Image (cartoon, rainbow, N blue to C red; front, side, top):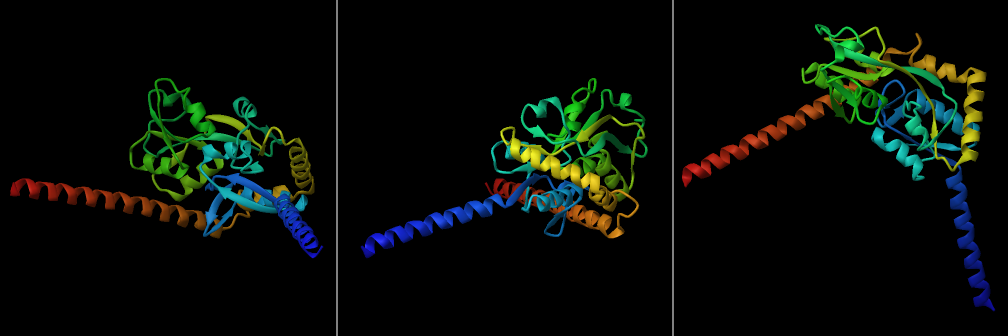
Length: 289
């Protein structure tokens, strides 16, 4: 009898632990993003901050959940939602007919533009001047999609927008097509480049959710619209884009990207040195033979 009771008790404990784990899982809202897109999402030390990150935290709070952010390549964020690895995706995601076939979208929360960055001495003055040019884009973005329409153009794809801007500065490409707000940040932080006044395209951002999760879509949509009505959404936007955006925030983005550029440069130099050493060793061996 004691053995039976022990088994029952153990079973009850396992069920209890399982239910607790499920409950804890239900209290976490996992957001997929690409933290290379200031001011919407970027890293400050080990923390991911920005408009999307803060808005997602406010939405999670309204849903009685804790926000967990998963940083990944931009072209993986929608797949993360589709496969259930993330509940929502926020990464400055533009609503397009193609993406609507993959995921569901909430109401849009901001209007955006794809802008063109060129060097200050560039002859490119409008989107029409991109004909036959080499254009840099961030892989998987709408800039990547729309750049395909440039007549006789060549599209160079980069994992991060910052890498495309560096390629422009180094003279490897003729222009960069990227979302307006990040474009402004990149131009402010780097000498020798400018932003064209005419937009390449206009678009809107929304939150992506799996197509079979209508319940979450409705809850997130309700929370998002409440934040808009309460003025909390605009407060977050003004913090990063409006006149209240602090110099510290801009400096944080600059420092992070500078460190990344230096790391990439050091990696290139190390690879070059290794190659030179290998060539020298080969020449020495050949001479010895």
